[in-house]
Length: 199
Image 1 (cartoon, one colour):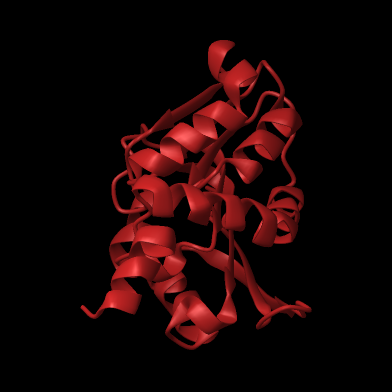
Image 2 (cartoon, rainbow, N blue to C red):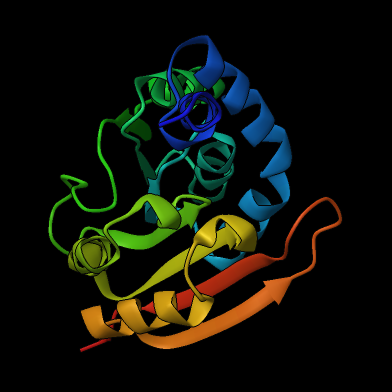
């Protein structure tokens, strides 16, 4: 890995140290619109349980906590200790009140119980997954009828958006809705809504 890819990996791919904290600040600003869209698209209600995969600096985690309130639960799983610290700091009050939990994890291994989540949200990290394994895990943790919301910058996705849809459907998700939203500064946002089948 040459110098530039190593630096970008420390900032965005696998954030760590000072570079990771800088990346977190950039993510909080640059991803805010996608975070708001994802939480809105998930249709969260008070008392629901939500899993946020790769919450980064915690913008979407905080929005989800506001939506489900103190009688709900928001779990954020992120492999980066730097991002977990930033997310915990942003969500200090709900973390203290114990309705937001931030822990190590990733899409492929969330350590959530079977059928324990009403919704799962992922913003700008699906390109880092082993997608088949990640989708199987997220299907497992969602309750029947539960919602999965994914959004990602098209230029970092690395595969055609339809491939992500195909991987999700192959894992068992249904009712895919794929849309694109124009962004002023960079490429379109890919937006994908799916459900775990209801019984």
